[in-house]
Length: 204
Ligand SMILES: Nc1ncnc2c1ncn2[C@@H]1O[C@H](COP(=O)(O)OP(=O)(O)OP(=O)(O)O)[C@@H](O)[C@H]1O
Ligand SMILES: [Mg+2]
Image 1: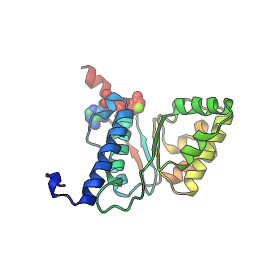
Image 2: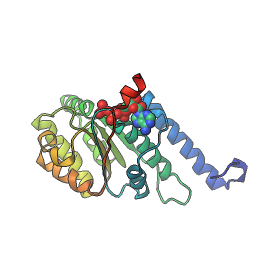
Image 3: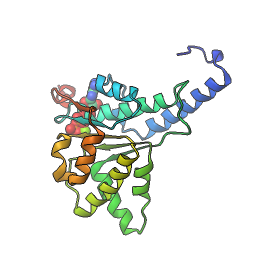
Image 4: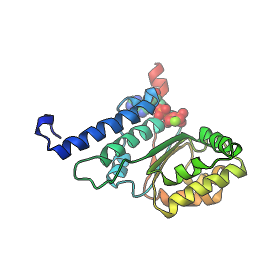
């Protein structure tokens, strides 16, 4: 890490500018409480180091820090994408959705006769879906989820999912085809977060 920007070559300087503006844009759309830097679990750091070769599944009970970890993992993944010596081409696109908002948006978009959202979520470099088992989508929405996950699965594009159940218990929510793909996508990167509800600590 350079302490003085005068030491940087023009190319390093340009990369640093790109990184700063990408991080500023990401921070702008990060919910306020999840902007706070936290120490993330080793499994999440390892996942970033593996360059998103698999997907990442953060599971655990209420309030252990799944969503905060996921936002900060996305941010560090973005940071890694712009690291000097990296071979990332272009600007990485990260799409982030709470599951219930996503399900509503898919239906609203269908009603308006468009289909951009499915395409965007198929192609984004990284997709983060928060609280995947929060609500059971309709059979129609499960089909859209299948289109999204299958395209990402066959192209090895990573997803970060937070959830209060494990991938093998997701079938009822997402439908069996999405659950099966997700189980393979996240193999080796299922992070079980344990502990007390941190919100109780905050309130104490
Ligand atoms: N590593 C951490 N250090 C400090 N505070 C944290 C950490 N992780 C999470 N928190 C804080 O703990 C609270 C709960 O975190 P978070 O919302 O991520 O939990 P969650 O597991 O997603 O909960 P839920 O299952 O209800 O969605 C938040 O206030 C969050 O900012
Ligand atoms: Mg959460």
